[in-house]
Amino acid sequence: MQDLRECLRTGRVWYEQEVTSGFVEMVAADQRLQTGVREGNRIIVHKVPFDPRSYLEEESPVLRRYHYCHCPLARSAIRVGGPQVSSTLCLCSAGFTKLVWDTLFDADVEVEVLGTVLDGHERCAFAIRIPEEMMK
Image (cartoon, rainbow, N blue to C red; front, side, top):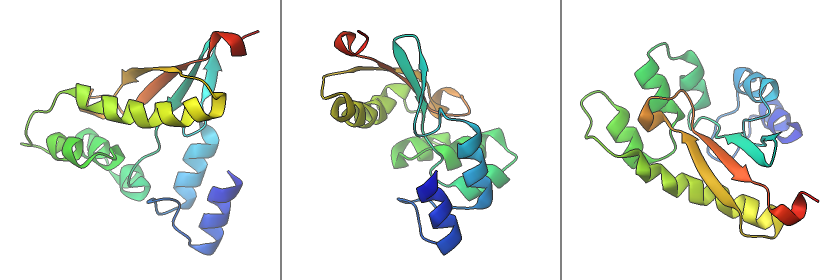
């Protein structure tokens, strides 16, 4: 959160995202965004929107999902009249999520896709299984 607030203060881009006060408030209000929340032996993580400003300002559910998604192929499929694309494409995003948690735990973790914008969900959500040896 400190980094996001600093980006807001200085106008610096955070990764690819323009940081607005609404974006900072959204991330601060829901720990599942970016960092994750532990539920039993899993950590539930939601991706942050690709275009936070447009996502927060948009009223159309379809266009909100479009502004949320980071993948150019999936984004084109979300647009009205776009080609149909299977949500198995989102396993790529699960792999990116896995890399982060493999590194944090220094172990091979399992990641489950809980929901994606391609399936009509508001957000992309993943469950990271905490390695058994970390549960002791």
